[in-house]
Length: 171
Image (cartoon, rainbow, N blue to C red; front, top):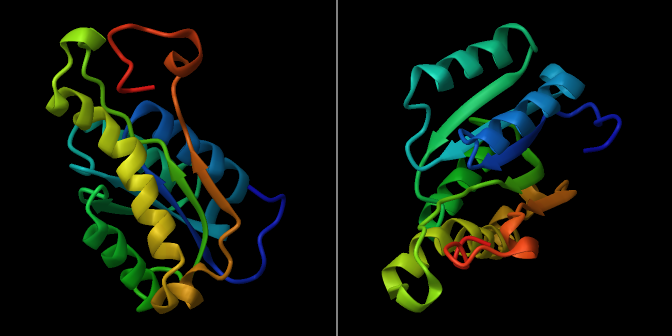
């Protein structure tokens, strides 16, 4: 994230925004920029625990963050385009500064016993979500929304480098 943002309010989207990594990233961004950018936390179910609500309250009240919440399955292309339409239509900031995919789902099954469904569940949040955002930001309909896009970051797992026979689909 850059040292300073321009004078326009810009948005940073965090997919997996209610997981540990997503909330840590939101806190870091809020600590550096406060209201200089709007943080849009995205997840399949949105804030569903009291811990999530406490984290949102802390971000808003103690770190001065402008936080929006969006629940949806972003492995579905229509969810991604709906989010970008909200940005374009002025309900949220008009430009997108960054997309961070911190989504995670695990399915601990040894590789030789892994079904197609067990492979797909952790795979979709990592690959399909990334694929959908990459496709959508290149759409002419969203050129104005994505013209300021500087960051498209996809997080992986230490499992990718160290290995875990039961999490090959997660890495």
